[in-house]
Length: 210
Image 1: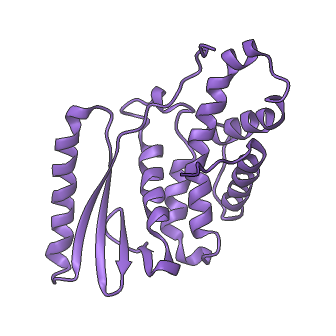
Image 2: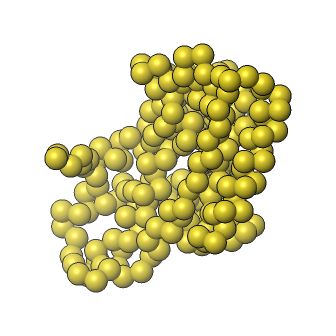
């Protein structure tokens, strides 16, 4: 099986396009993690050719973390770049929150999870928006997002968890939120999904063993 790969240059170009798109949408890109990732990837798209082992050991984790983080913005851009801005107001609102937060997910606290929580909702919508395959994200919904497949609507509640012992309580909470929607949207054409994100601990800036 072929493994999909992309050059550092390609990643940089895709992320730069996503950042420009967000700027064009009026999203306030305050100095922070968005510019940090851009700076790191811009440097390493060329520096990897001449970097010493010691430089890679010390700075490589920051590059790997940046690549890990930017793909959410890249994928959201790919999914909605051709959609009129007035149709993706909810995505713009989620991104306005999502561009904030700590540079490393490992530095999140209970008070700083808001940014990536909203970003997760936007990326779930992006991954389900495949009109060419008869599947579109529902953006004007009372749930975090939704999916329209033919005449069926699937309502989605998104939860990010920091520890495994919180999965059950998060699923219960999301299920209750879905039930409130079902109480309003009566009929067999309605379904529900709970989307759980648990991979919120990418590399922090520590030396690699090479």
